[in-house]
Image 1: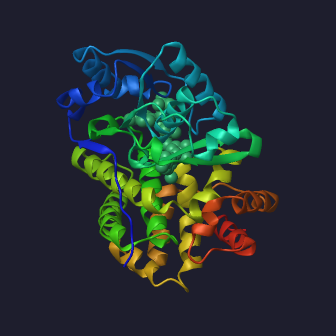
Image 2: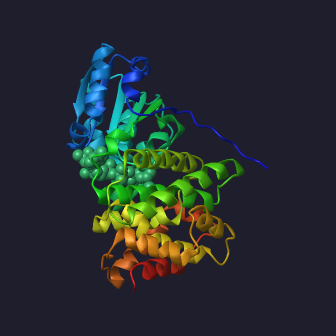
Length: 367
Ligand code: NAP
Ligand code: FE
């Protein structure tokens, strides 16, 4: 047996965890830049809790609220300039994966003058500003990962920054903030969490130590996704389970990275504006069918989720996602070419070649 394991993020989980632990935020600095999306943080209670804690701790703050879904390099550069202008000494990201990922890149760029290659290099002369993460979707698990995924127009795709220096210092997980999520986003983000734990488990970098985390997150997500298939809003305790499971799934990919599903999902989001979690969900059945003949572990995924076989998995996903987008053969070629340029393809065990990636796309879209 051989593995390394590290989880440097201090996680505070539970209703009211920000208010109860405001001194943790005080330790991060004296001036915060709060990074959010357009409006959800104003409506779900998270911004109010954070600003309340900052006021209590005598910390001043400014806010950048222009992070779009799948944040772009341009947006994080604009926000980093603001962080410098207001002399922020730490960053608080509040929101779904988009504001959390943006906050990580802003923390890097506020402390370093970098061109795009430098930004994506993962190695920085100056330490990125300290970062606090408050997820409001369940989710990406970004609060416990060393990744920031940005829309990078120069390559017409999404691209990841991976660096241990962008692990948040602390993360506050309060499921109350997820209660305002529409059912569709609840489903898409839960499917993203599922893809993290499944891909992590099936990746070339999977180790023994992540197996218990994988099995528990798959069990919880199996229960939640079955419940979500009737499209009714989850109860508070179900929301807590989802937030907990998505955090566990984040811990998995923090160690293993993602694989072909994410590599193939990015062009679907870039070119067709399909939500990240949905994009992954559309591909997962085809991916499991591809791996099934050569990987014993696919069976473990199915049984951990409380399912019978890959077919039943496919049906569950079908019910959750509804009617699939129509794509053309030309688009499949473009998606295939783009996916093949992602490093995550090689992290799949076994790694699919170009023909196999195309076949997974074809199966996923009935072509
Ligand atoms: P998102 O793009 O952050 O947010 C999607 C939408 O949900 C936005 O319109 C947002 O509104 C809204 N929203 C967020 N929280 C809400 C709430 N509590 N109630 C109501 N609406 C809410 O979605 P996401 O799926 O969480 O994040 C996707 C991004 O994360 C992608 O860019 C993906 O690549 C990335 N990701 C990162 C990692 C990682 O390890 N770093 C892993 C997986 C995925 P506002 O704009 O108004 O806030
Ligand atoms: Fe993801």
